[in-house]
Amino acid sequence: MIDDQYKEEFDAWLAAKSVQAQGLQEPRFVEQFMRELRSFPEDQEPVTGENMYMCSCAACGQGFDGHKRRHTCKLCVNALQSGEKPQFNDAKQVILVRKDLGMPAGKLGAQVAHASMACILNMGNWTASTLWKNSGDGRPELKGQVHFGISLDCDNPQHHAIEHWMTKSFPKITLEVKNEAQLKRYYDEAVAAGLPASWIVDAGRTIFNGVPTPTCVGIGPASREQIDAITKRLRVYQ
Image (cartoon, rainbow, N blue to C red; front, side, top):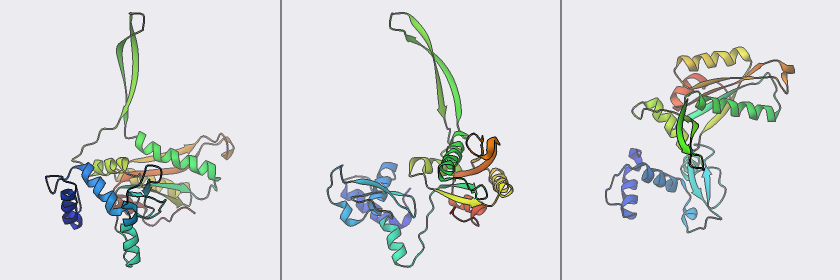
C-alpha cells in the first residue's frame, strides 16, 4: 500500500505511465514508484545496464536506482538537510553480539551470519517427497526430494513485516551486549514477545579453546516498534 502522503503523486505517476486505473495498489507499481521517488533526478536519465546500480540506502535500508554508488536515498537526504529525523516504518532485524568475547573480525562476521540465517530457518519447515522419474533406460526410478518453505499469513501484521523484510533489502543492525547473561536476557524477552529469535553457540573449533560458547542472538525480522521495544537501549557494535 502507498503512504497517504504520496497518494496524489502516485496517481499522477500511474497516469504518466499510461496505467488506466489510478490508485491501483498493485505491489509491482508501488515498488517501482518508490524506487524512482527515492532516486536522484540526475539518476533518472536513460542509462545502460553497465552504469545503473541497485543502491541500498544506508539510512532507511530501502532500494533505489542510481548511476553512482550512492549511500543515502533522496528522501533521507532531504530529511537530513531540513533538520528532520527520517521516519522509517519498514521491518528490520537486529543481531546482538557479546562484546566481552573480543572475537576477531572473521569469527564475528560468521557468527552474525549464523544468527541472521537461523532466524529465517527456524520459521520454516523441511518436507520430504518422493516421485517416479524415468531413469533414462525406460525404467521408472524412485527419486526423493526435500523442500524448505515458510508459511506466512498475509492478514497477520507480524507475518506481513517478515514478508516485507524478505522481499526488500534485508535491513539489519548489529548491536553489542556486555556478556552472556545480558545476551540471554534479551533473547528471552524476544521469545516472550513472540518474535523470531535465534540463539547461536559457537562449537569452539577455531577459538574458545574447544569450549562451546554462546556468541550471538538474532531477533527479527519484525516491525521496528516491536524490536525497538526490546533493544532500543543497546548501541551499535563498535
